[in-house]
Amino acid sequence: MPKLKSNRAAKKRFRKTGTGKVRRSHAYKSHILTKKTTKRKRNLRKSALVHSANIRRVRRMLAG
Image: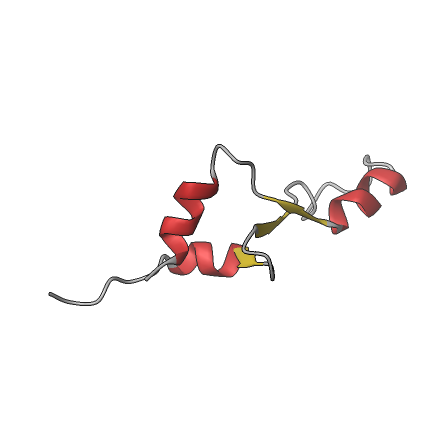
């Protein structure tokens, strides 16, 4: 049986932390930034954790 391939799009968007959680970056940070407040843009820079409802799906895409 051939090796499983990891999802390349997911590999670029998510990364694992040391404890095994999955980190993601925020959306809405690429364009139309003039109407967004400085505080909002600053908070969008920070990374976030993948929600528990989606964690199994993301881990499966990364495994390969």
